[in-house]
Structure formats: structure tokens, C-alpha cells
Length: 416
Image (cartoon, rainbow, N blue to C red; front, side):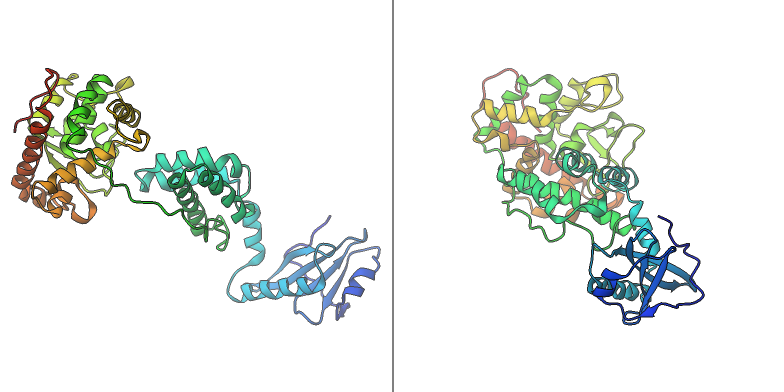
């Protein structure tokens, strides 16, 4: 079907009339295209083709140039709906929106899978340090249903079906994470004019209520855990021990690099360094951690040429698989619900030890580089050096008292 050229309007409007449903239904086609201009709704036009096809159009001017906007086929909607659509589009034009150009842009929007890839490459990788986890969740749970759909065509019901399937299978937290990760893609697409400003289908879907994680290893579990780390491989076991000894984030411990070590100080930058595989810190703030004697013993035990990752995995990359090892250990020592245990619980255990020894929560935040209590400058890092040494030594000493009860030569005596 031949369309109007956007720059051309008939010089005359011989067919101006008050359109009616009966007229639209009974009007007979001519040997050429005929336009009937509605006198009720300004700009609304009924277009009748020689083939008998009828469609509603909107004529308007934008930046002094004529524009045509296709509303819908006359068989698909009635005259009342066409007038309402024409009025709504004219209001958008008045607000400065070229509705024809907007529609063309929407028609060029790719599939959700394409937009998700674009979001990952152009935004997430450079802004979100945990982008890999979010990307995995989207690919695992959202793409199978949404991947081949255009962003403009995805509705809230499509999102609900994904979240409902996860929720009914008991994966409440994962459902929330999938919803949040998917919503970020739509929000980014909207802000970059890839999707309509009203089209985030994740909006209005309630998250599942969940309890905050508070799991820590008890004093009776700590010696059992320490001993059991010897059964998951040298590097993996020592990485888990380092988590408990330092209280740092699992991703930071996994990527500990020897060039960041200076004596007993582990100083690591906040910004990522792709050249060496350093992911940066969660809050983008550089940090400085005192390594006690048992922590330094682990570093020396895993000596691998004096460079690269301390906890080195396959192909000299950072070690992986700490989650599985943690679950395996906890199942072995009889911890209830080992499937709910994560390496992050060791960081939480360390923090609890800090406060149980009489140190303040602010001090614990400084040690663990929490954003609200993080150290923002080199000067501050050094001004807290004595406090850091004192706290880390106290934690190591307490762990030594607990773990020393075990009669095994594998345990490294923890003395500050």
C-alpha cells in the first residue's frame, strides 16, 4: 500500500465533513485514494483506498513541517476511539513531541535480548560491579520468555509470569533479584529513548517479603569449620580462612593480588583494573587491611612466583567455587540448612567478633569498608592504622582461642 509522503498535504480539502460510524462503514471507494477530513476532531482523516481499505490518520505540523501519523485501520477501531487517539496525539504534539518520529523510533526497537546486551555493554559493565550476577539472572530466567520479544510489546503480565514461577517454587529472594535486574534494563532503555516512557512493565509488581540475612558461625561451629576447610582443596580452603580472618568481601579476597601487598598491609584500589583482573571495591573506595600472622602465613603458603592472584585458580585467574565449597563444608559439619550458607556469612561472622570484643560498630565498618563508615582518603586510612592493627589482632587472638581447642596438626596456631 502506497503511503503519503510526509512532506505533502493536499492543496484542497474538498471532503470535509462530520464523520459518523455509518459513513465510515458505507463509504464506497473511488478509483484513487480519497481523504475525508473530520470536522469534529481537528486533524483526523479517514483514508479510503481504491481497494476498499480504510484507515484513520492524523495530520499535524511539527516545526512548521507537515506530518502524517497512522492511527489504525478503520476495521480495528471505531470512530470514537479514533477521535480520542487523535486528540491524545495532538496533545503530545503541543507538548513538543513529534509523534510520527517517536513511532518510527519505537518500530526500530530491537528484541529484549538485544536491549539487554546493549545495557550490559554500554552501561552495566562500567557502572555496576556486580553486573555479572545480574546478567546471569536475566539470561537464566528472563530471556527464555522475553528474549525474542520487542521491548515495546512486553507487558506486565509477561513479567508477572516469570516472577510467579520463581515465587511458587520457593525462590523468593531470587524472584526479587530477577525483577530488580530486569527492571533496571527497562529503566535504562526508557532513559535512553529506546522504549516508551510509560512502558516499564516491572513497575507496580510487588517484591516478595524476605528476612534480612543474619547467619553467622557460632563459637562452637568455628573450630569445626576451620578444620573442614582442609578438605576442599588447598587454595579454596585457604581463601575461606582468609575471609574469616580479614572480614573483607568474598570477591575482593578471591581477587587478592600480590602487588597490593606491602608487608602486613593489603592495600587495594577502589577502581577496577581490567588489565590485571582486579574488580574494584563495591563502594569504589580504596581500602587498607592489616594482615595478622595467620593471614600472612596463608599468603606465604600459597607463594606462586611473587606475582598475580594469591588465590590462583585455573589459567592463573582468580579462584572460583567458594559458594559450593562453603555449602559442602557446612553440610559436613552438620550446620542446619547448609544450602542457605554463603561465603559472605564469614564476613558477617568477622564483624560480629569485632563488636563482641568491645569495639564500636563504626570501627567494624571501617575495617570492612562499609560505605557508611568507609575510609575516604589516604590520610584517614593511615590515621586509623593503629586501630586496624589492634582490632585484627584481637579477632585473630579470639579465633586462636576457639580453634586451638582442636587437636590437629593442620590448624595454624593463631597468635597475634
